Image (cartoon, rainbow, N blue to C red):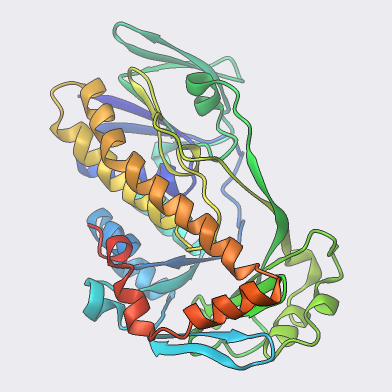
Length: 367
């Protein structure tokens, strides 16, 4: 039986473990952290991700933990609407959209993968390929051998660096903020509010919680976010004020330019290790889940491991590159500051909501 070792127990790593185990392959996941603690904030899972979750057998559990997104709006920072429409994703694309807390999704994936599959507190420090497979070394002196090695260890992937060498990350001139509020009634829909040089979004994520996110200029420091948005339409100031400051996540916006190579021999990458992307389209976790299903299909049906990995890469590189480029463009558009650029954005956003969604069929209807 083909033995596969996955480095990283995030969404991509656990999703791949589930898919590969369902394909009756021998899988082990190694995670550098000593425990999978509650980290992150919320996620938007679009229909393409829900289709992947169905293939993994966990869609019902995730739908129960999260909140279906049945309507959405885009508005100006003073409250004037640009778009407001129903999000009948299931009718248009065959699956709903939902908001879910990252911790809830990770726990569901961990349970489905089987916690005994995951070795915590085990950091990969290198590997060597041999004619028979891959020998992996860990910081505690442990070594393991596998037929296939998958790097699911995030944007700073050690596996990627070994395969592709040192690469420069690409940064954007803004700062991202994320939080989850439990003290206010969650909204009925998902919303994005756009203002000069900043934008703010919020959506329900289940269990009476609201996930919110913002992008601002880097001059805004921790503790200053409420001041930055104090004049914006409600419930934006209230959501910020009702979220404990220590629970607000502030992070740089970084990604990599899409490339045309992820692996070599019996090694490849999944998720952010392969294609980190900015949050403009909310597709980071969605693409990781697509990867999980695709790699299991390719390895299961391959005559040998290497041909399966190369087929997986040929299926995924062009698509994820397109998603990453459009995510970057969408984020930049929401941050436009010049009055003429903002006027153009308002004009573009007056297109009927369903027409906008139909233009994204290539993204959301993917199976």
